Amino acid sequence: MKNKKNILLISNFEKTLDEMNLVYEYSILKYDKDFVYYQITFNGTPNNFLNLMKNKDFDLNTQNKTWFLK
Image (cartoon, rainbow, N blue to C red):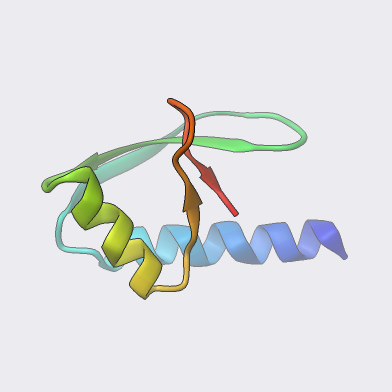
């Protein structure tokens, strides 16, 4: 069931990115058995992106250079 949950999370994440006016583009850089790595071009500040994602119920861990979706 974890796989199905992850697929739904990825699908919802990409749908949210598609609907955001300030996202210019995004692409999958790579993926492995545990993670999907995206590159996102956002026309705004990182804090603006984080706030918009939080409003859509996506919680991002930004403690490292690579951000993780919780």
